Amino acid sequence: MTQTKKSPKKFVVANWKMHGSLKQNQSLLDAYIKALSNLKHTQIVVCAPYPYLAQLQSMLGSTDIAWGAQNMAKNEIGPFTGEVSAEMLRDFGCEYVILGHSERATAYCESDENIAQKFMTAKKHGLTPILCVGETLIEREAGVMEMVVSKQLDTIIKLYGAEAFADAIISYEPIWAIGTGLAATPDQAKAMHKFIHNKIAALNVEAENRLKILYGGSVNPQNAVQLFEVENIDGGLVGKCSLDAQNFENICFAADSIH
Ligand code: PEP
Image (cartoon, rainbow, N blue to C red; front, side, top):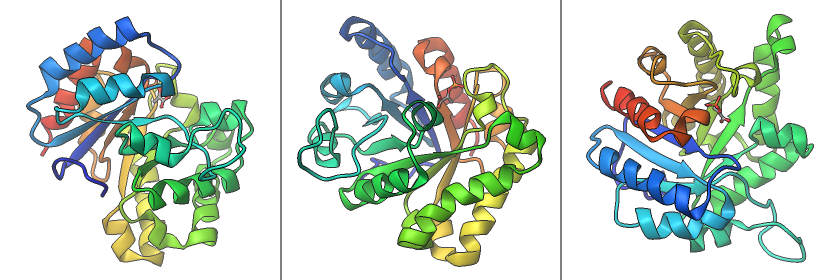
């Protein structure tokens, strides 16, 4: 794992998406720092829009809370107007980067190949990729969710081998659960997490041992314990509820209570 300051049992990752301002972030981060500095079993990660990474570095640098970005370029340097490289993220102290989030994959037509290249570029530069995978509602209703997730993973496996998953994070995010208030049930999440673990383990046991799998999609203070208690769920990626300090803190406390 890239330099997380402890070896956590659970991760809770805040995905702020395109929300925030210097002022709003300051009060949210102040609240996070006050409430979450003494967690014993959980690594908190805050993923903010690019312009606020300097603010995260300045406010979180002396805390146990880590931070990261929500995307990055697959290329390392060059004439790619509007792109941000892995090294630029490192310059601002990022340790993590969310890749392949469905909101990007859909709106910006990101291919699995593109995401796979970003994944390896992140690793090469010492960033822990948080790779989002998941199926649409139509795919779940058709019973092909494992096939869909498998294909998303296969692109990385084909290009770089299953060992690429060592020290990486996958976030299983059923697209139908993101921002809808309708989370996957613990059983649905458990089945998919088990499927992913088995798939990687069949190819490389060592990589599977060093892989974390989070659940994302309408995690809230009411369902967090039930989800995080599930074997093989190593924590959560949290969108909406990370924008409310009290909700986010309660989700983090839920994660920290399970050890
Ligand atoms: C996300 O977008 O990664 C996410 C999990 O969002 P929400 O928690 O709002 O469903």
